[in-house]
Length: 260
Length: 253
Image (cartoon, rainbow over all chains, first blue to last red; front, side, top):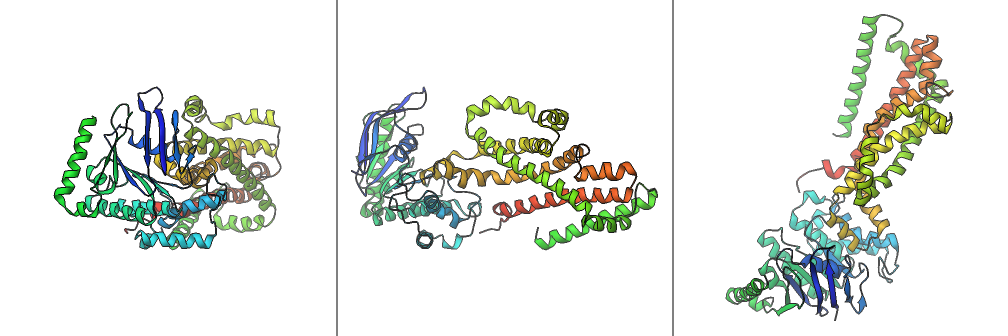
């Protein structure tokens, strides 16, 4: 198992518990979609997987190792505001590699075997800029490009670090439908290509059904036993068939309704 | 503004300044306001010698004060901005201290720190310190938490966050605060240099020229002080323009 969440408990301050004795796993290369109402702990769960928050009990293991801090192999893409506004697209994409060079291969901030050669880094940046179709925008600042292009920049920045886990928090929620679907397909493709274990948090049913090989439904209040459904909707055949796709969406909608 | 436009506007501004001065000299027609054409040759002459030394002494004091203020105020402002508890504790105190004119502390500082350059530099640094600390704090408070989380997820610890996020995020505000406080800094310098030193433009203007009625030389000193203010102001302004490229370079994609 690539991601193993083992009996975690989590609460914010003195507020209500969000997760209690909660466990699930994600296989290597799998795409898991997490869906639920706002306030249902979706983002909290993602931050726990990212090592940005620590569970009060239990543990999160990634690739067999318990997580105690952000892990170099984890890529994180948030909805917005993740780019440095004063840096160009290219410099933003280069940021992760710059940070790795800043620390050197110390195993904490970057992998022990990180290659820090500037020429190789440059090549990698150029590769991901063109793979994400933003090479033309390399010298623009984030305020000068569209939201979809900003999200491509954030994805490119993450991919330059060769992650094996990709964590996304509502990455396409602020985008219009065609842009969003484009990016969904792009990320699904990237995940397949690079054998990325992907967890994508969303509140859009269609997005969850398009992307997730399985769908985890979280609820408002305390989450104890995870509700995970296998999802055929992400298969090419079902995706192209509106009736089958809608049927799958209805199934998830029913689960969501039941979880409220 | 392009480089060319800003250069021509600087020339026009300087021209108008000297023109108004000349008109004033004609109207007043007394020794206390000599015309620019009398003062400028004296200024050029003196800058190559005695006045140059006074200028260097004053410039050194301001630059040292600016450096000390930046080095102490930026970390203090970042700490306040990122640690809400610390900010809650100190905010009322800062709100009280911020508007107090620090120049009134001059005698106290002289007694406590001795009549040296250190006390003069300290006083100026103190004034700039508060200006910078407050803007850096407000910048740091307003940084998106999502930005910090994203950069942390790229592997950044405290040091890299400072280097790649907090420092560049607060730099424009630091420069703006500097630009605004430089006028005050030079004014305070003038007052602090009037006594208890043998070098500095304030000393030159008040003790060496004004008190012995050498008005044209006094104006050379005043020109020197103005030049110091103008150079510092435009120095900071130029840095600001270069750093804020992402704010005014807003061509459509």
